[in-house]
Image (cartoon, helix red, strand yellow):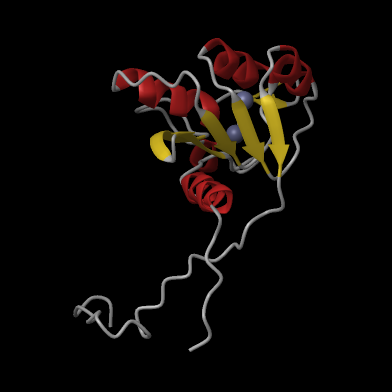
Length: 165
Ligand SMILES: [Zn+2]
Ligand SMILES: [Zn+2]
């Protein structure tokens, strides 16, 4: 068996952000965010409707000024998750699939994040200005391996259950 390349920590957390984005419900954008401190995942989020509200993919987007406003963005939802559980994200790194919008950048700055790691840009460039002026480091990396490399067939210590056969 060929040895798979082990992901770096940055690639690992970006892949987690990509995985979170799979839960997104707006067809115009699937975004994921993972807040990390000392290699510890504090919170995750994806862009989705408010709890109990209909999803864009079911009822269509809610467009205002050419933006869909139905969802909270991934960064806000990660912040909300941290807040709900009483987790202080000050000093953490935000791993995001896409560069933040201005609103999310301001929220993450106010919460004290120190670094943003992304692999794709967004149309709203004010976020970069806000981050830079606040001293938040922006790191742009290549998109990581899109596969989750888990192969139940090759792990000799694993045994398939009836459902995974
Ligand atoms: Zn939408
Ligand atoms: Zn946003």
